[in-house]
Image 1: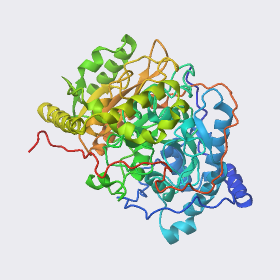
Image 2: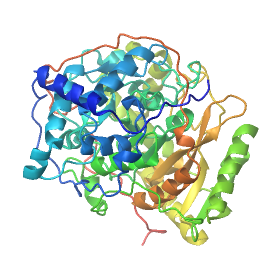
Image 3: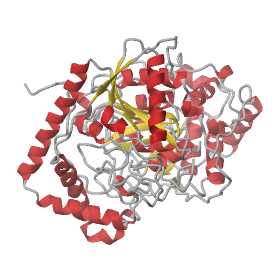
Image 4: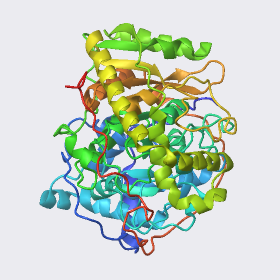
Length: 571
């Protein structure tokens, strides 16, 4: 599929805005709020500064559904775009084109229109004069991966195992985004319980015979198809990065503890990383600023240093050599096994880094001890044992995986403790690699496969490393940006590069990615999607589940969590 010429004009019409405003006044949704929640956790910054948004006069996209989040924020704040107009465009595009992609599992139009009208009020001059500026994400539509609880709405992890499950409360991430004024459009499909790398029920918008990656494949597909400007995902074994690479979008896997995982159906409690997904790094950075924050329900968040008070950066500094003085380590073992078309794209990416002033050295990522999989299996099994009488309801290959993790619960506790100890050693080795090579970031291919048919990788676990070298970042808990790096000359499918850093250095990685995307905007490429209407399931909020966990499942977890460290060796 090719890249369409996106229709552009100067700004959005005032007439369109006024029409949407009149519609909002005449037909506001009547659905109430979706339940109460615990006290909101402390968020480290307000993210209300607009000095880094583009001027609305420079935004020339004519179809609101094609707007990036930062562009939409500029138009919403200027009054040139009504939140209802933006939501209308996203819902209409989804209904017209999602038939072959199938990225949405459910949508919530009534709730969404109510939220859009509330956002419009919050963005009004009267409200701003009384209550101050609204957060930058106010009024922007959002897709949540079908692991994030929203009180009174279905939460099924794209699995028959959870048919009929209704969330008992709000996940912390959703509560923060809701309070910031975001408009929830719906839940996106995930690979069942986030187990695999395929998300085989979803088609890649670039070629629907191929996988969008997993497990956050639904979120990535919705973004690539321009059905929604922002989405959440999770990453336990590459599940933010593999879909980003496969679909040509951008993701940020934050440091473990930067974003709370409370109220998110887990895969493994000490490796799950909620994170933002978007078309560009600026858009993903905008969302990260409102996902991050301390949460008493997820103590690891209190280890995080403060996020920037003004929010994460949204614009490149520019200049001829903006990466001058930056030193990048190339994971040579991962690069040498790439298929030729991907090797060419990776080489071009390195040339771009050098042209912008960065220096490149070969490095070897640490090799993980084999027993680290013991921890993955035990943690996964300890959650899924509540469904041990429903193994037949899992997809066939996933049922076998779950059965194996249940068997892993018989592993002696000393083996789990040894695995945790070896994980700490691995993290120290990673930090020492940074120190010894004086690195600012590492560069790792986003995939080692030039596309994968949906059924070819169905049932392949995220722990296997089959489709990409990704596990290093989950074991260390370190932040990674996955950024588009062109399309394969053989398959026409996108390819991405992972930019990994030290713990808590999201800001530094975002600054690097902003310069790279400004110099070569591969993220702007869009697939041509043929008309394929779909009657997407529509759901209204109902009585929340019994709980007590927001997911309405038994989600005990641990009284402790893994904490990232910058140490290079035990004291």
